[in-house]
Amino acid sequence: MSKIDNPFVMYGYAGPEYFCDRKDETQALIESLLNGGNVTLMSPRRMGKTGLILNAFHQLKEQYPEVACFYVDIFATRSFSDFVSVLSKAVIGQLDTPLQRAEGYLARFFQSGQITMSVDPITGLPQWGLSFQPTEAQVTLDKIFAYIAQSGRTCFIAIDEFQQIAKYEEKNIEALLRTYVQSVPNVRFIFSGSKQHLMFEMFTSPKHPFYRSTECQNLGTLAESVYYDFAQAKLEVKHIQLSAELFHEIYQRFDGVTWFIQVILNRLYRLEEGTKVDGTILQSCIEKIIRSQEDNYRNQYKLLTQNQAKLLCAIAREQCVKEPLSGQFIHQSNLKSSSSVQRAFQYLLEEEFVYSTDAGYIIYDRFMALWLKTI
Image (tube, rainbow, N blue to C red; front, side, top):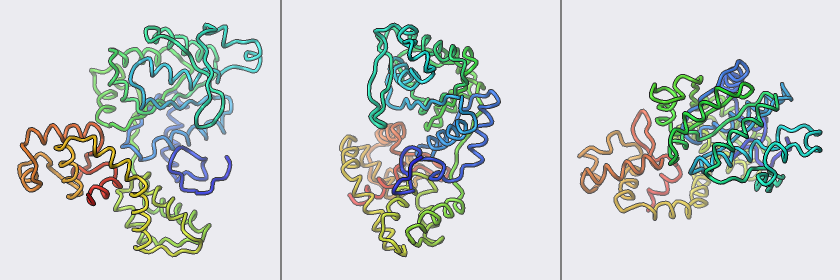
């Protein structure tokens, strides 16, 4: 992969050189897939699931060039037909041989009027897909998996934010997708999700079709010492000095969550060559990050009801709240009745403004929590 200016990548995957550790997790994921298993990967958002999946895919393709790896993010989908459309854009046109392309295989396999071509907004490369009516979604999905099966190639498909299918209006989508998992022998799946309670229910409850159908893996935080060694090695390229003590402060303050720490390291890397980072410089970097997101935070805040906004600010002030529905917390935070707080809290939890930890409930976006303290 090509070199990038800043080694602390905040989005996507830029190659193994910019990917910190996760050696055991990557190996476990690869071993499960190569041994015929499907995997459920769970963790809170921004812990690094996408990077882990793409790192595993990178290694798989290096070791086995003939395999095909597809990453499909369904977070923005709102219906089953959306799901099929997103999957088609990831897969269609990626499994044809040069001879098949020359002979117009795709147009013959799918109805000629069904094939669409667009430009990937990120890569700028041509992207194939399928055009269909929502009522034809299941038939179209049949064709997509038939296309995958006839290729004969070993395929690995990662479906990220898989819990999103539970929000579709259509019924029995879990059962339908389970049949494809069972019926297409050359495909192995990774079902990844950040809403752990939903993912846990889908894959461990006897009431659900995916019950015990996968190997479950949970992604935790990176070891602090490993992360510091990685950060130090990258910062040394610009002779930027970050002490282990100051990194420990960052790690603890942001609970070891990869994305938040990565954003801070990305900012530190922008400092002038030879800078020795101290507490003042670190705080300045964090303030710049918050200012860069202020409009976004303000817009999110404006969409909340008065009760939701007051509760969110109260949790931010406390940093961590063990019992947000307790009479003591409601009284000391000057909130309204327990029933209104309960409704507000349920919304904040479902929309992931608030997240549950072993210690209690916190604001999920740590930078937003800091911003909330200023209003």
